[in-house]
Length: 251
Image (cartoon, rainbow, N blue to C red; front, side, top):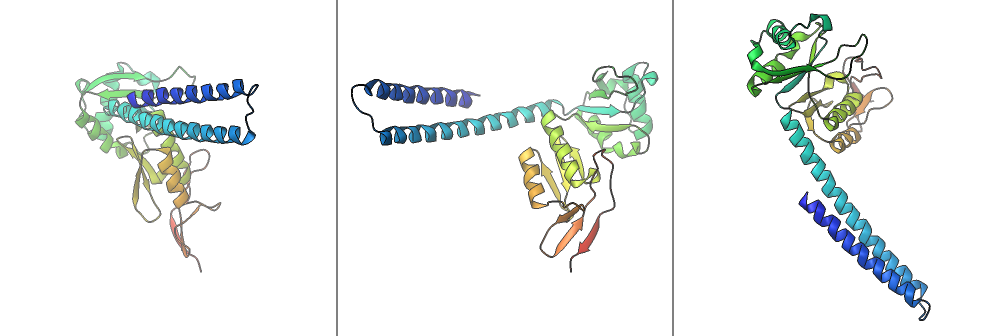
């Protein structure tokens, strides 16, 4: 934050200096001729200075935003979101959540292991709001997260409590690479490439770069070289999975 403040102060100082110089030239224009080439040169220098200063400021703001996002994600490290729990099953929400996790995941989670539970978002007719579950210890949270596959076909799912930035990254990755090829772990988006390699991304820029390297054609094919291509699962606009991955060799 201090570096951003210093950059702003320097930018304002440069701006004031250049504006004063322009004003001085304008004041002298009535008594001493000012050539067009001189004004053009001064303007070009001023434009370059402002552009470089704004780029530097933009980079610093970007770094600051990344640091803030990492801090926010760190503060959410003990939290998971539980989806698909019916409203009329609630009773005491913490007791209900601990019972579901213990019964379905076979992970012993007592109400004492949970520090807070509450439903997120406003009331919506017929819509099950996710339940925010904050655990007292990271170890319990990680045990629950590792066992989440036991919820398959139960109508109940678990997800990490991502920041908006991380959520946007995750959704963009899933849209391009497919639902089954992307997941999150401790707030980091993990993507399985067509060669079977895992790519860990934590920014939109990293996802965009990966998409440029592994673009998908209209037929859902990801090109990885001039001679070979790999068909990936891709999700449609509704988020449904598509066909099984298949290697196709171009002839």
